[in-house]
Image 1 (cartoon, one colour):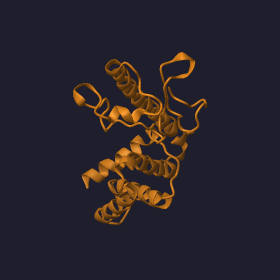
Image 2 (cartoon, rainbow, N blue to C red; image 1 turned 180 degrees about the vertical axis):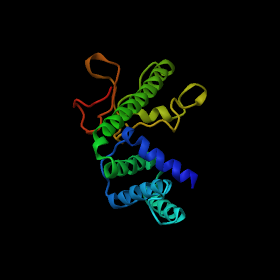
Image 3 (cartoon, rainbow, N blue to C red; image 1 turned 90 degrees about the horizontal axis):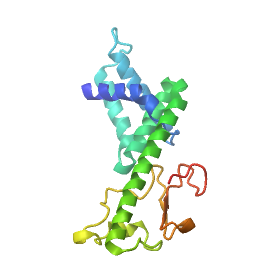
Image 4 (cartoon, rainbow, N blue to C red; image 1 turned 120 degrees about the vertical axis):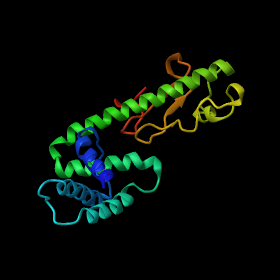
Length: 197
C-alpha cells in the first residue's frame, strides 16, 4: 500500500512537470486518476471514502495494468498520459505549465540523443576516414565496424527523437557541411521552426 501511496503522491505532486495530450484510453485514465485521488483522500483523517483501501488499490493495479502494460518503450509516454489525466481532472489550471515542462524535457532528451550520435559519427570518421553515406544511414553505427569490431553505438541508443520521429541524416550535408543530422521536432515536419539540430 505504501508504494501505491507514493505513486499517487508523486503523480499529483509531479503533475506540473509532466504533459501529454489525451489518449484514446481517456476513460481508463480518468478512472485511474479518480482512484489515485480517492486513495490519497483515504489517508486523511477522517477518511474521505468509506471504501477499504485494499479495494481501491486493486482497482488501481487493474487500471494501471491496462494503461501501462505492454511495450516497455511506450511506458513513459503512457505514464505521461496517466499523469496528464490526473492533472486535467484535478488541476486543470496547471496544464499549460505542465505541457511546457514536458516539451523542455523532450527537447533536452532529443539534443542528448543527437550529441551521442554525433560522437559516434566522429569516431566513424576517425576510423574509416569518411562519414557514413546517406544510403548507409545511422544504422551502420550499430554494426561491428568500430575499433576491435565493436559497434559505434549500443542498441540502447535511439535514432528517433522524443516524439518517435526518425532522425534525418544526410551526407554530405548542406552548405559544405560533412553531414546534416537533425530532429524534425514534435510536429514531424522537416524545415519548420521546431526542428532540433
